[in-house]
Amino acid sequence: MKHILAFVLLMMLAPMAGQSQDMNLYQRKQLLMGSDTLPYRLLLPENYDPTKAYPLVMFLHGAGERGNNNEAQLTHGGKLFLRSDIRQQFPAIVVFPQCPANSFWSNVQWVYDSVTKKRDFIFPEEAEPTYAMLMVQQLVREMNKQFKIQQDQQYVMGLSMGGMGTFELVKRMPNTFAAAIPICGGANPANAKYMKKTAFWLHHGDVDAVVPVQLSKDMATALQQYYSTADMQLSIYPGVNHNSWDNAFAEPQLLPWLFSHKRK
Image 1 (cartoon, rainbow, N blue to C red):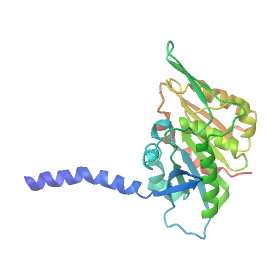
Image 2 (image 1 turned 180 degrees about the horizontal axis):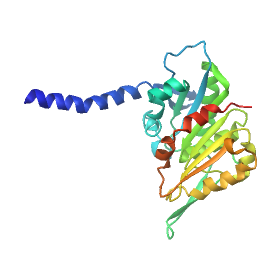
Image 3 (image 1 turned 30 degrees about the horizontal axis):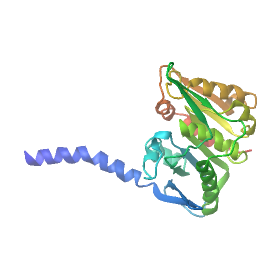
């Protein structure tokens, strides 16, 4: 009986051990910039060949994953890029930086109405980048120095705070990214003119109680004037709250769409 129980326990723990081992495929790294440090995790392609150029994917996490443990940023999205079919079909260098606890990817102010219990986000049209955003920009440059990056296949995606950061990173580096996937994010529609060289697929839940879906709708409207249908899409998920990243990650065409774009 003891042997049977031990076997069952082993079988229950095996998937957890495998999952932990998989996450360890993301190498622990850090970017030093002045006196500050930006932790990040780095996933290299299977059978990585340093003489070969690969696409680059930057993934920006949400506000709940801020800190300096260099782990929390993999909570949402980390498993997606570990899928064997994804790694085989889309070999790429994938980077998950971690925003400091006292910072934010994008320069945004938010106001909470205690009566309506709704948040209002204010994105300045012209504002200095946060220090976290400056470090992410430097990280993109460092990746291009350290590795052979396919210059026409650099991408950025993120969720919530990271969705906002996705818009802002494209704005700050307008000639860098071929495509971007902001999930439950937002930005100032007036800044769409700085993003017109990058294809966008926006995602949002229509009952998002944290980041209003109208932010994605407004950005989609602002971006549409620059794009064909293939290069600007908006997916609204009925009945979905803030966790629309689950729906986005389940989209079978999500990464095929991303990697199909090349910077012109």
